[in-house]
Image (tube, rainbow, N blue to C red; front, side, top):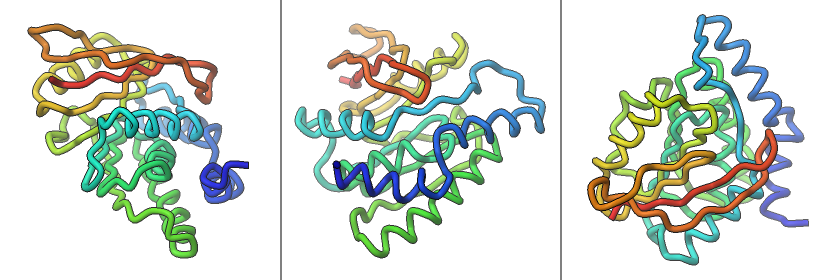
Length: 211
């Protein structure tokens, strides 16, 4: 078995924090605060898929070797960021989640992670979780931005497009199920696209970069 993946499973899945748990918390949390937008449906990229993506980005030299900062727009329970940190030594990992119960669950998962990390020293990544609409957060310092956009509506994707076009040259975007508009006007270029396992089935992961 992959020792990196085993560390993830021991930290979260064996402590009852699975993708299914996140889905249940998301559903109840949205009901409690009357959030009905279909864009807020829950799904996760599996940890092994996330590790594969990060390893590929490293081979392509798309992530800085030192000091890299990663953002997850709609970070849910935070598991995607924890998985990413097992494949690369990010300086900072920032998750932004609008559903407060999911945000609180991410903080719980961070506590599990910090406890495990003390005994393994596998990663020194600093984690930060923000409870807010990601459209209100400045992501300018990000080197890599993740967006699980499967259920995102056109208005939300338009906001992400504007965000991407304002990012610095070299900023990498990992978009699940959808993609940013490319071309000379947008300054966005597609690097690769592949299908990988998700919590809900198989999804297309597209890697794009601001040129």
